[in-house]
Image: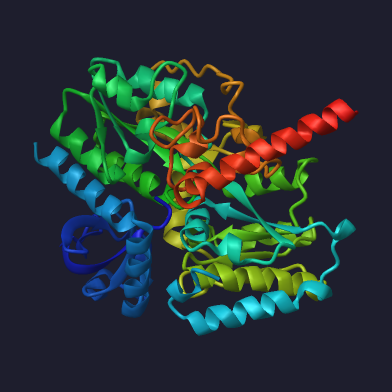
Length: 96
Length: 390
């Protein structure tokens, strides 16, 4: 929960509500980007940003190298599998 | 140094270990006792165990694994409240997966689900909100837990629910706060912490300023720390360096993620939705003033505590369970009477065994179990001998 997981913003799906589609290790899911948007970095500029995603919210912009390092760490801690499983399980609930 | 080659940069890791060793004679220690450094955050605890950092440190440094795992400090009474809410026929109860196996006084959420309650694990509070949109005839409650790291997410979800006028969504708010908890630790008479590693992602939200009191009022060094093994080593070195130079400051080792001012939009959402509780009850630590938040009056329609009746009964931890002493660093996890016997990750009795971020689960999974149990037996023999001699 506290480590978060890196992902890359691929599309802004709901500009008014600041929702983007983010690719997290191959899983694409809606993520709220309110915490990484400001006057200097408006919504339009967020595409392709690497972000640290905590429970569906992008909490920090990171560079690609940091993203890769963090993914390696999460993999070694066994947490990447847990996060991805949680995301997938959540999507199944929503589709039903 | 059996694990050092696993560090992403073994040369840097070795250099840091050498620097740490070299500081030994520059730091004053009371009665030659080991220095106690506390990593507050469960994420740090997990990294420390996974990479064997503790075993690699010299014996004059002891790491105390702090209470920063929200699942681990959840008292049984609150789990009972969750079960009560979840068993209402009109409710869909949603939670992060971590909380499912935490024991309540009668059952865990997992058992309640097996007994027929509609409990669903979600990845995000946003998913709980989506369930509310799709099930207008049901009340969807999200179990909001976690430190400041997860507070912006639940606050923003409530603000979204309000703006859409979704009335069947509410939070069961059990968020806890870091700063009052560190203060309680510093005020506790049986704890002698010499320095702190501050939680990286809590700091990402709240910034550096809230930790200044640790240095200014309590004269202890504190370093905001990242989650890589090298981050942790470097922060330990930074804390020791402050001690050696008689400095007490907030330093930021994790500046690549943590801005000094934190995350303004996140903080803004938190202060809109939440306010401090007078006190919050922790498993093992008891009641700590201002260590939790509740929802502001304005959001009472989204507050499960106000919308439904919640028993809110205080339940004492099982007597044989010593989570509290472990959380305070009074005993090591393997010294607990039930560690590895009646309390295991498969059937946890205490919360520190439930989460992979809990100190007991970490010792169980990454430590040498037979060796630890033998050590406990030896320690008990020594204590018994001492007692009969006295």
